Image 1 (cartoon, rainbow, N blue to C red):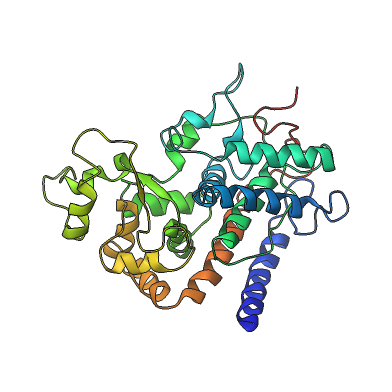
Image 2 (image 1 turned 180 degrees about the vertical axis):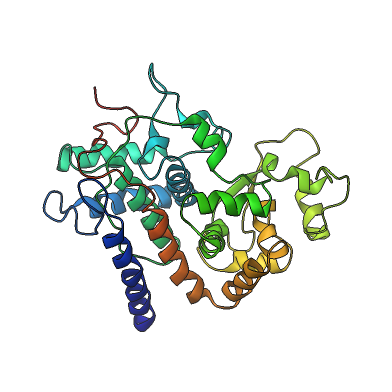
Length: 331
């Protein structure tokens, strides 16, 4: 076990170094020791509050991980998703991917309040969100990695970006891959990061069309196991029940493992965007099979891809700001 953890750490570090030195932006780059002197207890504070929140509600781990994803795919990892609406800002929280489903904001508020008391005006909301995603993964049994830090917070949001850039459950494989490529991510990142659906929930409205042949061509969806579909229909009727929640991974819904990929092989992926990884692309299918067979391989790649995603267009140096309140820009 110790050897395995050391191996994962080594791989994570190897993944980090090229990003660190190749991603220089105006005023600096990201590196794990960014707060070692300015706020040495920062990571400990984030970890403690996330642990308390996940202990209270296991689903919160997936919610925080999802928020990080939805943040990075819109203008980069800049905490724009955390901004409430105001006179000058139209919040991303009302976008199609976030409305009635994005959650965990109160946990991030608590972390920010604690950090402002410990080291005022020092730790960005963007870094808090990135660290919370890592801790959520670890707390549920997934891999750990060194988180490059030093992001600053945006002074604006993008509702259109949130609506258009975040992959949707009903997107085709090609559309999803195109959205990943726009962010500098590849097909390996797509499959590995989709593995985060080993924890969390999805609403009935996110996959109903798969249960009732609403695919646009009138033909049944043969990419879902029919007994599994029948089971889902009990709580996801043809109309109504839109907000009813279902586990993304019905085998081990609160444990970060590789059963998500095993479910895909059994045609029991909940979302269309999950199952197309097996049915629409040869390379993606091979990766699904590899991760289903080898959990450590999945963990290593997931850590690499999370570092890569967390490195999408960060604001550093004098760009952006360090928000005092994650919900609003500084006055």
